[in-house]
Length: 220
Image 1 (cartoon, rainbow, N blue to C red):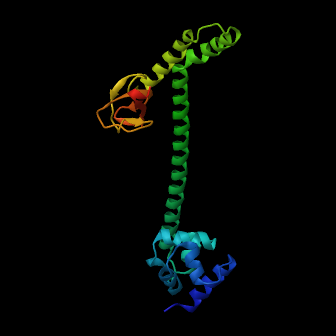
Image 2: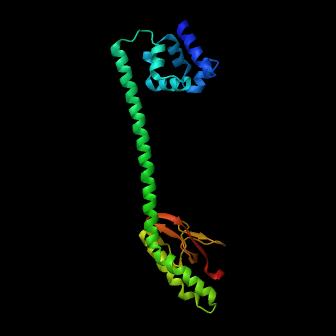
Image 3: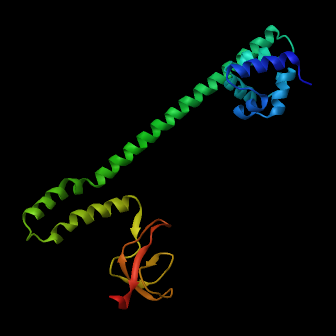
């Protein structure tokens, strides 16, 4: 049976934060009405700390204030010290959690920077030489594009090798059809029949990144 004094205290605290019923308090805190009944009975010592923290947060009081207000016994000096120690440990845990989260974020940013720097090193020749070569091609339409291709191909090969990525098959190759590795662009074909590679697919180790697009050989 609920204690009238504790029930009134809880009603007063709830109304201060705009909560008009114990059912609404249960919904706002995520705490069961059974646990709230325990608080109204003054059985605060039987309620878990995490539950008390939820209630204290919504009611906008400290954990110490909540425990003191709804305790059916007068806290001795030793009990008060123990409560303070518990509160300090909780505060320390929160601080440690926030510090860990900050470290994780900093590590992510550092890893991203290292990844970008290593990628830029692999693409250095492309970044430096390709814009100039492209401009020369615009100025001189007679310049053979094939002379520019090595700038792109070599940089791309270095990058793919560094990441452990390899092409499934070269473009134009005629290979046995494998539906797990190849995407047929049109028509029908049985596994094992020869098809022609139209667009490269890629593997990273055993992981399939993109299936190679293939077509029937007699489709041109």
